[in-house]
Length: 405
Ligand code: UDP
Image (cartoon, rainbow, N blue to C red; front, side, top):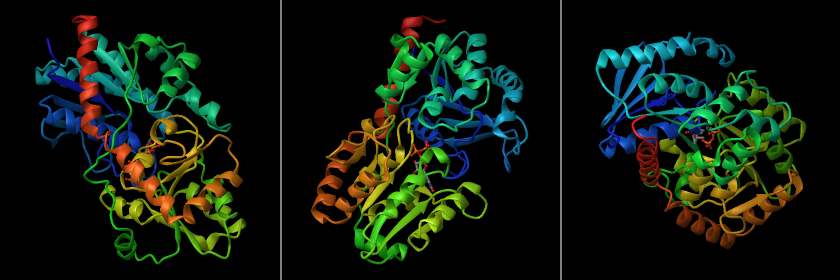
């Protein structure tokens, strides 16, 4: 039997939520793109997520062959730590939904540990394969940055999922290794499937035109794109920016977060003030993906100063737009950025070498162009259609290996 219908579980955040602030980021994009491309291949996809502000318990046709099924999973305002208590209720609602629709799923694919708890329960009731993509893992985050606090059940649930899921998808070889090392995960059930990029949206645009469109002038431009949280390492970005040659004007554009309400944004602003670079930092708030190619193309360099990234869609999007990336050799970043060819990745978390790399790129149009061209070339083999085809192949293989469970 081949895969005809798949249930994607994306419990805590609707894939259609505006990304770039709060908890909505790469995972939302991943689920949206995977569903879109599976749907385009004729697979029926139901994405199960919580109701949220402005969205009652209801099923929405999201794309060809793709529905988003909103079920009650606690009040919209519930803090992340409280969501665990709504998991059983949500799983029961999923079971009831399938009964009422009279349909069969061949695979349940869960995203993040909360969804994994739900996916494990429903897949065992339905006797079908359970696939899990964690996106981030508690033990890796704790190792990457002291100060990361996680729900007390998270690491245990992640370990249980690795022991029970028929298919575990890692976003990089590094993530696979960490799963085996930190969770004793069975390596034969872990497959590496890197993320993708929308190559028709993220493409190189003329830098001058992009800058004009954004109302920017000719100064040196460093771009950060992403949610604003401590793990993203904007502290180091500020410290590195404060070391740049002061006689050459520069701007650090910070895209993402909510400058009006997020405490994390205020902390970065305050740090910038303390370091004397407040005038060089420009907080843009979250920007729709459709407009991001202008930002990537306007920038001389895109920075990913994170303590940890399981993949970094932002790095790949920047490369697809022909912009070099500077970051650290952490998590999945070396899978995306080729050090010395499409950007620079540093092994030590110090602002000086990071600032040196920025100076090198800001000071050489030729280097920026050759690294940018190499980045686009590399990105061209990483479209989401390839990701979806690989994932579908893994669903099929897992079903064949496990038999009809
Ligand atoms: N993003 C966006 N608008 C913003 C900031 C970020 O659309 O204002 C998107 C960005 O294009 C990328 C995703 O959010 O696709 C972030 O994914 P990434 O893997 O870099 O980080 P994560 O959120 O998974 O930590």
